[in-house]
Image (cartoon, rainbow, N blue to C red; front, side, top):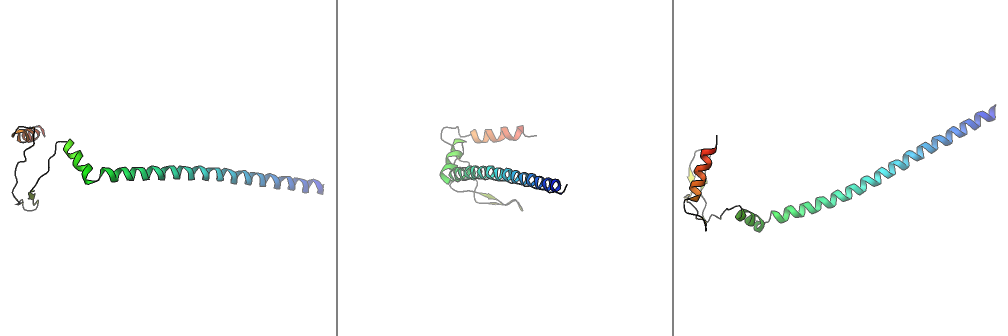
Length: 115
């Protein structure tokens, strides 16, 4: 009877160790997979950060603005929103290839279509 009890305890102990070992191995596989995913995401973040830096460069911003039809102002005027005063002299910028009144027409059309 005593031998059966000791044998049962031994088998139960070995099964417990087997279950603990299996759980630890599963945790190690999960950790490994997550570390691989972290490496991939870090590489992706690095590539995206580099892309943002390239697209944020002044030359790239100027190229994108020109593609949208924007032109560079030589002397800018600034509007003070608190008192409505204007610092500087506002003027219309001529865009090569567009009629002189195209900017005014576009602005007045946009103002009319706004609710």
